[in-house]
Image 1 (tube, rainbow over the protein chains, first blue to last red):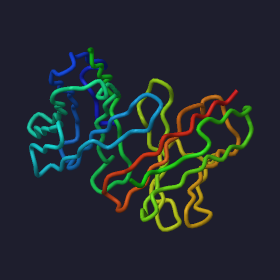
Image 2: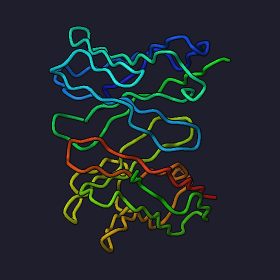
Image 3: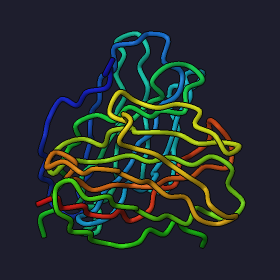
Image 4: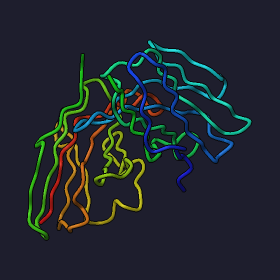
Length: 113
Length: 113
């Protein structure tokens, strides 16, 4: 069943500030997580992923943190820009080794000028 | 940069009609997927396809749905007799390996009247 969920449906931040988007999961055996960005009228775009043998992974202006103890992951976006405005989804395979990705509801991030 | 493409961008059809949604995955990818997103809802998995056969499918993917890779480049989703509730964005995705990043296309908006 669905195991990936998001705490907040919307988030507004000032341009240049940092943003944090949160995601909870319920399956303690989950071993791979992905963050996708979906701009209006477009398909999901891969941002960053993390495997359960890590608790932090950094990309360009983005950091994903994984807390396996409380089954929580977060996406941090540093120095937000107008182009960061989008819906952000966390996703995970339905079960270990599955190809089916289960997406959360999404958080709409709005960057205010 | 290679990308997944989909046609048409918008398809309007009458209830009960057949539709075929087309996708061209990234050329060296071997795994192909269809997802759908009803307006305002999360992305839902429909089916995955590898080596000319379905490898996983969801409960949504009933007998009205079928997929095909008719040649070396196209990947299609057919809905035999559309229902009003089939109205959604349909996203094709592909990946180079089973548990690698899935790249999504821009989607086809299907409207069933």
